[in-house]
Length: 430
Ligand code: HAM
Image 1 (cartoon, helix red, strand yellow):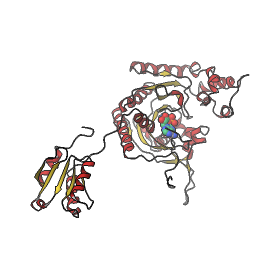
Image 2 (cartoon, protein in one colour; image 1 turned 135 degrees about the vertical axis):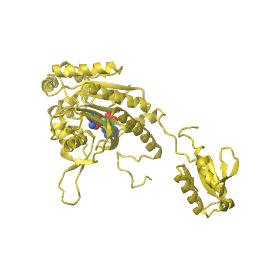
Image 3 (tube, rainbow, N blue to C red; image 1 turned 30 degrees about the vertical axis):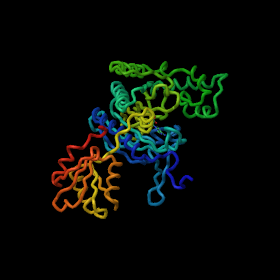
Image 4 (cartoon, rainbow, N blue to C red; image 1 turned 180 degrees about the vertical axis):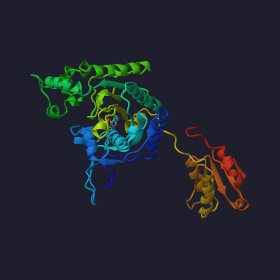
């Protein structure tokens, strides 16, 4: 019978093996962020709900259906809060709040942590998931757009997923999108076109989203829809051409996808997503991002350009596990301290503590059991050596047994740290 107390639906415990796989991709992300000049920051896990409503857009799925709203159960504050569904709105709120417009521009920021969306849980779609997010705020592009796309692509390559495809689009701006939307709505309202119920409603609130509808009945209707890239104003068209020219100059391969519109309202111009090759149709992007030149102003700042991306770390770890790569080696002790006197846990713990204080990965057997059982457990732990405490301890000596080869010798306690330090294997080495 399953236990009645369990993790909430759509959340997961990361047990040590999976946590280690996460730590590995987080380390790759952190190293890349530093190499590209993006400085790590944190925002609260919850914010005023208005930040997401205003920033992401009230008519988006993320806000309308998926926002985890929270309210204090007591106290003075009457704020309506929500758990952060993404990092961009909070980072831009912090940019305005802390006067980052006075810093040298662009301000390059990076954040890695859990996000929350009350979505229908399924494989690769969780209610708590992890993103690595980077933002370059205060640069209108187009070169920085290409730099970011290349950074995302490099992350997947470095993490061990070489088959990731980049989908790229421009979704115009306030100058050209209204006229395009009017054409799009006219297309969907034309005689003979039948829209499913959900799409009929969306046509009123957010017509762009019909282009990336998950409903198979929409495929044919969308195939004949006007393409935004054919209706960009000269400034947006020029920006898009320049982004592509910069990507071409770096030798980055991408596919222009006119149906790529992204699910958040703040985007203008450049939009992109990363998919595993052949999985584009499954709504399971590994990551995505784009330009949001109006967002800082929406959140109370001066008009400021910005662009960024967020990569879903859960999906990367899942893809690596499916490919059988990326599992880091288990932490193995170089030695376990065991003793001839089953009840003398005091000396075992004391000597293990001294060795750990000297920087060595060492465990102590703290069970009250015979030496033979302690040695068996040390072998099961994968330790290379057993430090055996016996009568010689009174003279400041111990027995050091090589658990691989079986040889044993008497060693002065004082020499032990230096001796073991030479034996510590690099993680992952045989
Ligand atoms: P997003 O496309 O909503 O963009 O999310 C980015 C990535 O987070 C997705 O491609 C996916 O890998 C992962 N993700 C999203 N929802 C879930 C979920 N329920 N379970 C697991 N993974 C998920 C943003 O969040 C934007 N803030 C990106 C951005 C940054 N744009 C500009 N700057």
